[in-house]
Image (cartoon, helix red, strand yellow):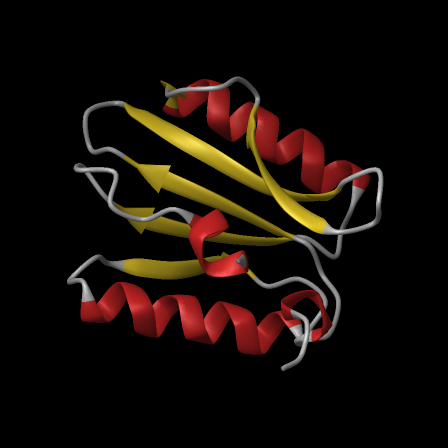
Length: 113
């Protein structure tokens, strides 16, 4: 079995889109980053003016993990957009994918296991 963080980012993103389609959750690529190794931000829109923002990071052992940013729990869409824009200004290789998920069914960290 291969490690998930060795997959090309573009392949991982396509797999996420397919998984969301199976759950009838609309997901779209809003910003394409580096095809092979770009990190990913997932904006999970709760369709009530709030969202969760999940961002890939490496832990102290170098393993890819998902962190909820800019805070744990839902933030306003405006707060999320400001955070995402700051991250893109630091790393132009970032991907941004958005999923419409009012019931919070999608969790990117579940896919990383």
